[in-house]
Image 1 (cartoon, one colour):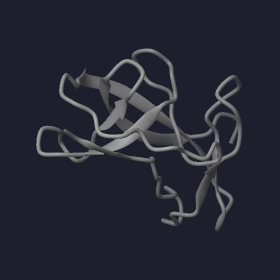
Image 2: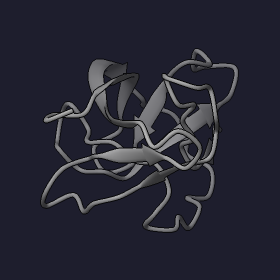
Image 3: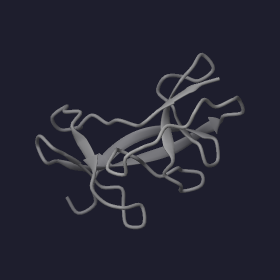
Image 4: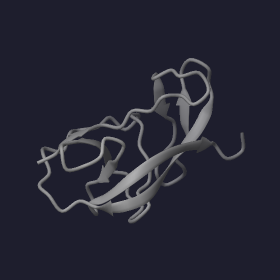
Amino acid sequence: MIALAPLSFTCPKCGSTDVFYSCSPSCCFNHVCSRCYATFEPQTSRVGEFTGELGPIPEVDTTCPTAPCARCGEYRLFAVAGDSVPPDRVLCVSCRALLTLELIEAKGD
C-alpha cells in the first residue's frame, strides 16, 4: 500500500514553498508564489500505471497546488510514498496513472 499526500511545489524563481493555486481547473492551472509573485503552471507526463493498493485519499484545500493528469485531465493528483513507486512520481487517483511533474512558465508571463 502507498501513502498519499497533497502536492506541494517550490517556486522555480525564488525557492519558496509558499505557493498557492490561483485559478480553477475549468480555466487553467496557474500557480503564484506568495514571496516573489512569480506565476507558473505544472505540467504532467504519464510514465506508468499504479496497480497496487491505495491508502486513504486525503482531503485537499482547493487553493493547494494541483495539476492536470496527462492521461485523463483530472486534477486529483497526489504525491506518493511507498517502496513500489519512485519518490519523484505523482498519482492520479481518478485513473491511477503514474506521472512526472514539471513546472513551466505561466502562459502570458
